Length: 130
Image 1 (tube, rainbow, N blue to C red):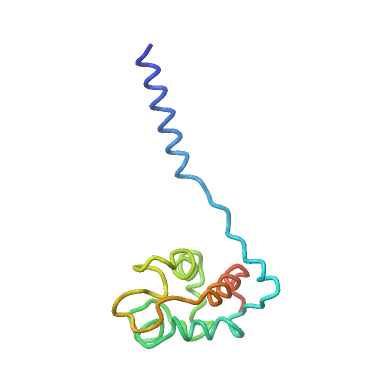
Image 2 (image 1 turned 90 degrees about the horizontal axis):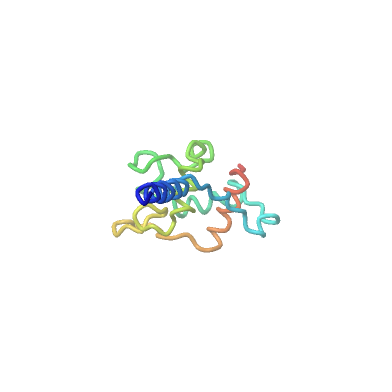
């Protein structure tokens, strides 16, 4: 009887642990000011990209960095949950993979300002309008 109770206890624990791997986090909501901020690529995002991403040695033609971020058209293939949003917003504070990178040899910007992050967040939340 004790053996059966032990099996049930271990099985229940394993079931609980397995259930946690399938938890889904809700989609993050856009900041309140996104209703009034018209964050579009042409008006607000391109200057942020040009200053922080499409710089010499980074997301421009002829470099090792993935993607050409010099125009909306060439950047569009990277505007996915697993690419732009992930690296710029989700893991931005990770010095190894967050963008812009905090690598020692990165001569460019190492972080977006809070205002830039808010604008990028609104742009992403609104599905990257051109």
